View 1: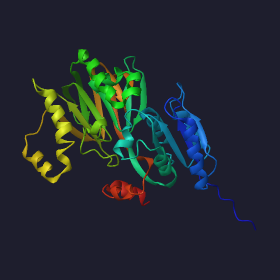
View 2 (view 1 turned 135 degrees about the vertical axis):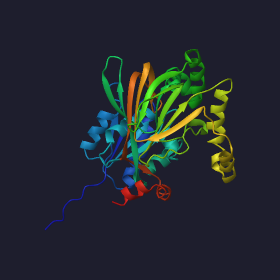
View 3 (view 1 turned 30 degrees about the vertical axis):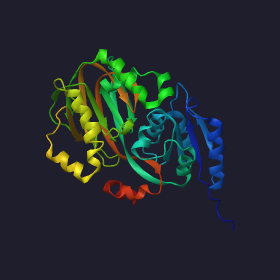
Length: 343
């Protein structure tokens, strides 16, 4: 009696044609697939109408074992949104300006060969997804996922005002120009918010950011306690007070979070220092925000237009991501992830 035929693993590549060197990418993926004895790779291009969600669904239906998201943060976010809850793993070939998820997971950002090797030979790590329901000014509703951060206010204005041409030329430094262009619009966002069903509270802040991860480009650590697999969303509100408010914020995220927290002595200095009230933190599983007037909103570094209210929540361990073998040690620090991966 003939033995049953065993199907080979199959990789699908969802790529942004404006971001990648397609010929080089195809050559290297084909070679890696052949070396691993996988099936012939599937290829899907993103388009203006389909940022990656639709074609990723096609990849799942055609039996993809791993879906490579090759492009910027928008492509990675779209692929992750479609893979949510599917059990199919996502690998990342970063080709954008911020490459936010790759930086937060310590994935390679400038080595195509290493990124592709992880897709075929890495290990699976379960991550949380942040989810948002956006209500527009016309009362229409949209639901989206995010991997790293969602923001309302100044950071969203900065992203909207950042030049695409400048991003191609100088990378994430282009956001400095975006900040400068946003200064004329600098004003606090007035809103009411509720965390985990608590009574509404009023807040006036220049930016409210909801994070699944904590690091920004340039080594800035906005949310030092954020972990992508802890089942919790971290929230930061920037509330500059007085003449030195913005300086205090910069000192908090660049010096205190980015430098001092990396050493035992530094952490002792933080413990002995007066807390900076210009950056306010909270954590929870569910956040509702209603703004006084519609405000710019962003997801993982992409502008998402004006929102008059935002409901955000965490979908725990709903995404599988391929990471290097060494990351298995790091994941032991997160009991939720370790428990899930042992099932």
